[in-house]
Each structure stands twice: as C-alpha cells, then as structure tokens.
Amino acid sequence: MMKSMTKNIMMKNSMMKKKNKPLRKCIGCNEMKEKSELIRVAKISDEKFVLDETGAQNGRGAYICKSKSCLQKAIKNKGLERSFKCKISTDIYNGLEQELNKYEA
Ligand SMILES: [Zn+2]
Image 1 (cartoon, rainbow, N blue to C red):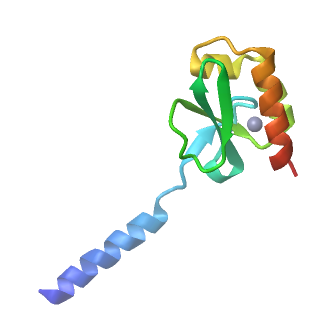
Image 2 (cartoon, rainbow, N blue to C red):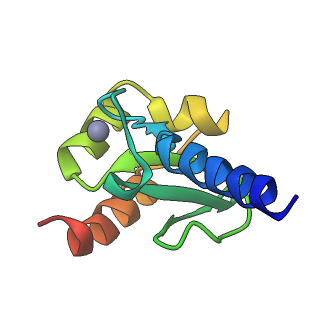
C-alpha cells in the first residue's frame, strides 16, 4: 500500500519536470519564447500601460522581448494595439521605451 503511493508521487514529480516551460509570443518579433525572456506589458487603463516585471499586475497583458527593437517592431506591426484592441498613443510607446531601457542589456 505505502509502496504504491510513493511510486505514484514519484511518477507525478517526474511528469511535472518533463512539462515544458510556458511559452509566450512576443508582440514585436512574433517569436515564441520562455516567459523569463520576455516582459509583460500590462494595461492599467486606456492611458496607462506599464512594464510588469513580476507579472502580478492586474489587467490585460501582452508579452514582449526585453529589447527596444522589438518595441519598434510592435509599433510598426501594431502588435500592441492588436493585443489590447485599442489605439495606443505615441506617449504610451515613448513611456514603454523609457522603461525598456532599464531591462535592455
Ligand atoms: Zn521579440
């Protein structure tokens, strides 16, 4: 009895380890990447978007590489606007660009 229970737990653990890391799509380059390589953009309101490092911010979210070139791509291909289904002003893009400076290596 005890033996089979232990076996079950071990099987469960090994299955969990095999599970792939969650992938998210960058709204700039459209590549699927691990969440840790991306940063979440959260919509606080129509006028306010922030980079959400912890992923804990409420509101709609989209993911982007920690790279300004991907932000530029997202501006061009309107990836952010499509993700959030709303117009995004230049001010918001500028603000996000400023914040991305902090994360870009
Ligand atoms: Zn990207």
